[in-house]
Image (cartoon, rainbow, N blue to C red; front, side, top):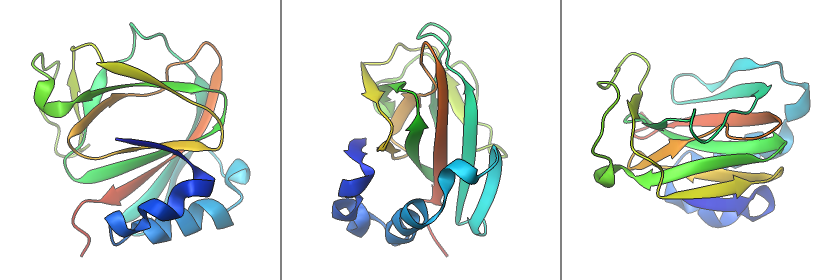
Length: 151
């Protein structure tokens, strides 16, 4: 898990072959003009999901993980207090892995909470369980999904 400002993103570009393209998209696109929903960047290898919704409480948030995609979650408005826990420490599965949606949920409590302000992002790898969209107010963010194994 990484927490950083978008202005610092270049230091992480070498971690994955598609990260440079992700950061270029985030910097060169008018993200506030994008409608909520999915936006293709590079087929199934790289796409963005814009979320604009009321936050939920810590108690309502469930840890989730993904196998096929890495998440870069950039907050645009509000503060997203995301929960985090190493996946190998999660022991109370709420669901089986859903391959079609690339998601599994857990009942475990996060090990820590990360208050992510506008202009900052959290980067979650498949071994990072995370509980996003926790806030007392509205959150507008862009979640970029990056294929773990690009073709």
